Amino acid sequence: MELHPTPLNLTPYKAALPVAADCGNQIMRWSDELARHTEVEDMLTRTYLTPAHHSAAAQLAEWMCAAGMQVRRDMAGNVIGRYEADTADAPALVTGSHFDSVRNGGKYDGNLGILLPIACVQQWHNAGKRFPFALEVIGFAEEEGVRFKATLLGSRAAAGTFDMAVLDNRDDDGHTMREVMAASGFHAVGLAKAAYPPKSVLAFVEVHIEQGPVLLNAELPVGVVTAISGASRFMVEIHGLAGHAGTVPMEMRRDAAMAAAEIGLFIERRCQGKPGLVGTVGMLNVPNGAANVVPGRALFSIDIRAGDDAVRHAAVADVLAEIDTIAQRRNVSINARKTHDAMSVPCAPWLQQQLATAISSSNLPVRHLPSGAGHDAMAMAAITDVAMLFVRCGNGGISHHPDETMTAADAALAAQVFTHFVEQFRK
Image 1 (cartoon, helix red, strand yellow):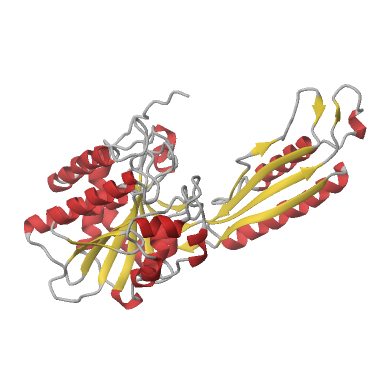
Image 2 (image 1 turned 120 degrees about the vertical axis):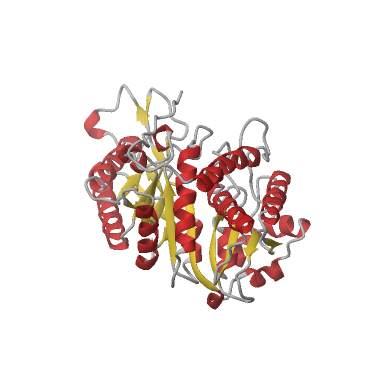
């Protein structure tokens, strides 16, 4: 599939100030350079505690130090830069995102939320500007869950909610997470020390590309996230009866694939027309299928998300009820196994308002929108109020793909908004 960047119309809006424009160009250069730290040549793949992951962490630490921050790395592998307050031992406004990637991913997902605040800190440091609070920028070591099939490892460690059971998860080479961490000098017994005391954190604010087309279609460079959607996921297995495609009459078939298709179409209908509610069948498989065989077995996934948990739960209940109805009518057996359930995380209204004020200060319209994807802010909400600033991406909003893109102009405007937010931050 050939993708072409979508032209971005910035003409109605005030251009970024010169300092922010410098930040925008710096962010784009750093993004290109960080993308060179990859496990696979000519594609960005950077999974937890691989050599490419370690070299990316070292690069982030170098940039943080050069920007005037004190840098440490905790026992989860998070890279943390602290820009000290104008008084010692002040609580911190915390920001950041993740620097691991999916396989063959994009270079702005996660990375933008680390590089943008580093670039802003560099400007403040050069100007000798400090705040009544410290600013900590966290490069979370793992969010995607690719290597060990467990997500948000870095932010869960920082929030004190790390699930120690996942240390026994194995990668594709059979190594446990515990073994890989120990070989890298990170020992599980020290994970508790990675947790931030809640009183030391004023708030957590994450900058992230939208990973969708809403801002792009609205011709807006940034937006304020209202909530991070909760998600319910299921793996569904259907057993019918295989038969000859030419000899089994239509009314006598127990077709597992058609039962799966009917469920998928119901999910599509049920999740339409309700803002913020989405339903997806991302995997659909007919094991050992053949063109001339009525499928006797089908496997598929269900992913239902919404910013409002009550809306999501109602949709899930309707889908499960329809699955039972379809099973009875088609004379098939259906087992729907829940594999994931995450509550939605609302963004704090007081932080949303301060972000909105920062956006307005740049003569930009304020757009509020939910996040359908999960983010590190979900985990950090366990210890503090959270907010997110979305930044427009091009190519129809595509993400988790090498054609993921954004512009230096949008990076500059986002840096300008973030700068205003931090400089005017009040709790």
